[in-house]
Image 1 (cartoon, helix red, strand yellow):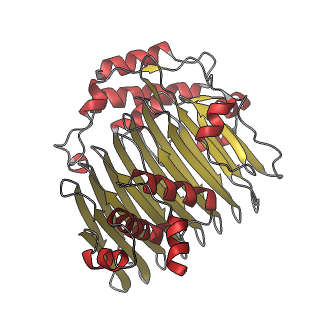
Image 2 (cartoon, helix red, strand yellow):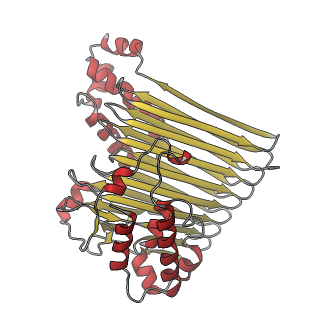
Length: 442
């Protein structure tokens, strides 16, 4: 599918009555995408990730959001006490959504509705952090900008229940593409959690291209859980940019379990003292999955803090990529920045390309970075087998233990249980973890 074909779809789907500022940005982004074209491995940022499969595929735009309640119930997390928004192939489904009552000063709504309402925050914030030149995929998302999630927290507003945004990808006669936009605006002293869940039906072969932007004022706190469970025939590209002011906290939990080809970009700007970023990531690949994570934390002010831990588990002929960069600006003293990438290869055909980076222009900092890659400890496997546990089950226990170090950071049991069940189910032999624990305690 050529660049021109993507733009032809854009011409067919321009909404009538869109605000002038959005029409202008769409046009500019479409021109930027036409100039850039799709990235190639000749570009350093895409060295290990070939997106030609996306460029050469044919995608349409969904025309309806039909989905049975039973099917949705089987796919989604059982997070009932939440402000729920459901999107089907990129289209908002009011039928399946339940935003519920919101406290004063809080807006949670689909982007399409926010555009109809003329929310001022959209004009000032959409595209402020993610410019159309960031990547061709960012430009493409902006060109199609129409649907997604707006989360606007007023001054000192606290949202007790999480916002649960579900993006369902259906199996259909033709592959579809969607370009969701996430916009988070957290004013001073506000607090909220967002669950971003991408789930694909078994044989779905669609393309999802997400752009997110989060702006946190002083003392704002946002926890962002992303669970990606696309089918193994799908393409998933995502970027998330965060702007943080004094005493703010942004915590990202990026969990990737699905997708044929996956690319995540995560960038945080720490712009004032005591701003803190936490990046926790887990990617699990089997068969021929390709999962690429690029992260960057920019310490632009003194006394800012970041902590990052990404873990990869790869089996079959899966390939993982981790490129994490911590940048400390000149005179940004007393910064603390930590970064680690640990990888577990379950097959001698699995592959990981890892590149942790530190770029420091200040002399009073405490930073570390590192990467490790290995296989399961044969001595640990032997010790477990000596207790009557089969080799397959022993391997499964040790694999889950490796993943648990990230899972322990996630306070939502619905997510951790889903990830643990998925990892266990994809191992060579399904096993009953609770049964093993009970046998071991006997």
